[in-house]
Amino acid sequence: MKKLFLFSGFLFLSGSFYWLGASRSVDFFPAQREFQITYKASIPEFPQAAEHIRIWIPIASSREGQTILERKIESTVPYQITHELANNNEVAYLEAKKPFPSSLNFNAIYRVRTAEPTFDQQKKEPQDVDFYLKPSRLMVINSEVKTRTVRATAGRKSLGEKARGIYKDVVDWMKYDKVGPGWGRGDTLRACLLGNGNCTDFHSLFISMAHAAEIPARFKIGLTIPEASQGAIPGYHCW
Image (cartoon, rainbow, N blue to C red; front, top):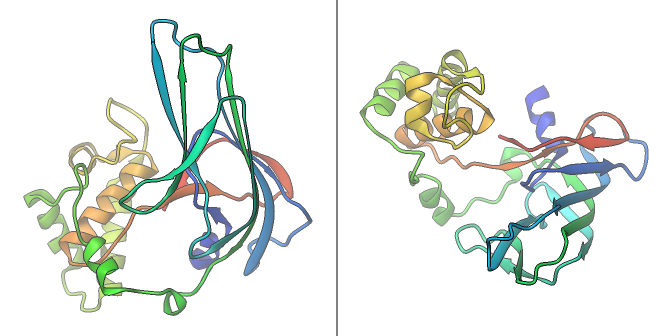
């Protein structure tokens, strides 16, 4: 049960810097939590050799497990909200041409409520199953992945049991270690070869093996809400 609760404190947003300020005192990992969160992105200096700069910044939106109650955006450069086509994620698009401003500062201020639905409560559509069985450019299914998957799922009957076997195989093989070039890209082949990387690499290997076992799986990325009522969040996490 504890692993389920860990998912209730995530905001589906990716990027480099996060600042958290809880709007009220909360219990650790309750079923529902509410926060005020400021996402800050900045470019202190523009490259003078460039003529035209385009910037995409991810924007959090309401989806399963979270509701954006209020969103305010502050930017020193004009922006527009767009959507990427594959997953319909919202993105702030900014562009600048010479003469560039001295710097760029972008703040997205959210009031958000998180609540983790149970597996049975989550809406499942047939097209989602097909979409989350497809490999991607770096999360591939080759002979090595298939061999690992067969070994990890041997003797396991249900999808849940097979997924647990894959999870154990990945955790036993992978080491959280940012050594060597290429870590953090979610490259399944690198993960199979070297057995190290960050959370992105762990999850990419898991997803590739899940797909090899015909288990729908998807990659999520965001930030972890800490126990304290306020403070800074230094970076992203995925699960």
